[in-house]
Length: 216
Image 1 (cartoon, rainbow, N blue to C red):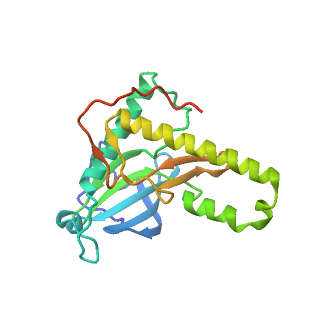
Image 2: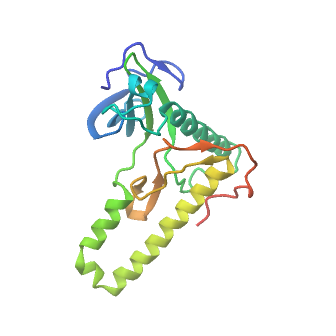
Image 3: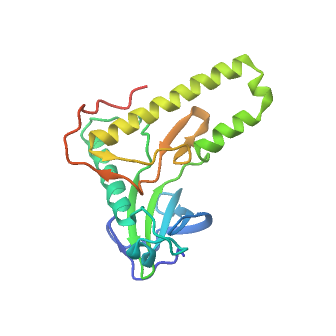
């Protein structure tokens, strides 16, 4: 799918030559997830592809109605990314802090599909990360490893709490938090990030508590 023609971009300029498809990672209800290569920044990225006709009709590739709204997902994900970039520029957040959700820097489209470019999380999702730990009986038998695991789980949970609080402080509600929608950005330091804003909404009332930083 990743061979855009007549491309328009919200990231400024034409982007059809910037991203190279490496391989398909998985199917989605309306398209697929692709591992791509950013030739400008020399790094892996994730590209979410959605078929325009499915998006227009609000249906899956199997012709069933679905609650996800790709246009809404694109707008909210790029909006929260802009909020974050602004907070970093203005010194409200340090760019070295663990930001608990993937950013979405570019979107574009061709005649058949919509495309979202997002951060690449190299170590899979949290569901499989937890399942792999519990499959290893030797680790479960070790008190030291169990204590380390409990510490890691607490650390990851704090990241998700702070990330969710940041979203809420910007009036964004994710509405689909799960182990599968949490990615291991870097398992070596238990760094996690929330993905998939397909069911997210923006609320109008003021957030009850202002955000004060990603502190751990």
